[in-house]
Image 1 (cartoon, rainbow, N blue to C red):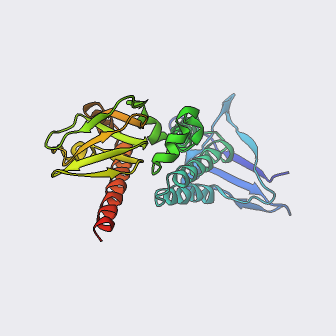
Image 2 (cartoon, rainbow, N blue to C red):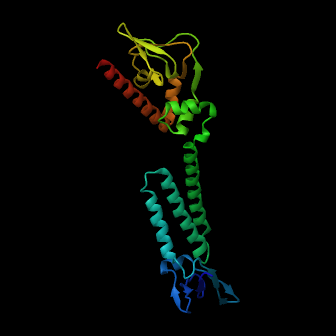
Image 3 (cartoon, one colour):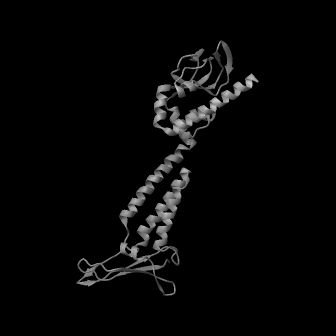
Length: 283
C-alpha cells in the first residue's frame, strides 16, 4: 500500500483563512510535512458543522515510501516539458511534452487533497492537441497511406515522405504516351511539369539532338523560375509519365510548405544529376 497523507484545517470564521497543515505518515510512525506553505495555500479545505470547524481527509499516495513530494512532482513536470522544447525531432518533442503533461495531471488529481479539475483539464487539452499532432505526423510518414497503384512511382521518385508524396500526386495525371509528344519548346514557357517514369525521349538545343534518360523531371527550371525552356524535349510512344498543371501545382505547394520543400529538394537532386551527366558526356 502507498503511504497515507492526512490534511487538517483549523477554523474558518467570517472571511478569516487559517493555514492548512498537510503531513504524510511515515512507515515507522513519524510525521513529515508533504507540501510547502505555498502549496498548502492551494489545497485549503474548510467546513463548519453546528458552529464547530472540522475537516479531515485521507489520500492514498502512489509508491511505497512516497517517491515524490508535491514540490518534486511539479518540478519534474516542468523539467520534462522544458526538455521537450529542446528537441528538434518532432516525434520525440511531442512524446516528451505529453509525458510532462501527464505528470502535471497526476499532481493535480492524485497528490492534492482536493483535485484541481480546471488545471487538469487544461493540461489534458494541451496533451490531447499534442497527441493529435503526433498521430498526424506518424500517419504522414507511413507508407500505408500510399495507394497500391502509386507505390511503384513512390519508389521511383524517392526523396519524399509518404504524406508529401500523396499530397503532390493529388493534382497530377499519370498516363502512357500514345504518340510522339512535345513536352517543352525551346524559348517558350511550358505550362506543365513532367516526371518521366520510363520510355525514350530526346532533346534538341542549338540544332543539336541528344537523348535523355528516364526518371527525370522535364520543365522543372521553368516551374521554379518562370523562365522559358532551354531545349525542346520530345517523348516517344509507350513512355509513362506524370504531369502537373504548373499553375495548380504552384498554388498547392504555396499552401503546404512541407510539400514545397520536398518538391524543390527532389528537383534540385534531379538538376544535379543532369549537370553531372552533361559534364561526363563532354569528357
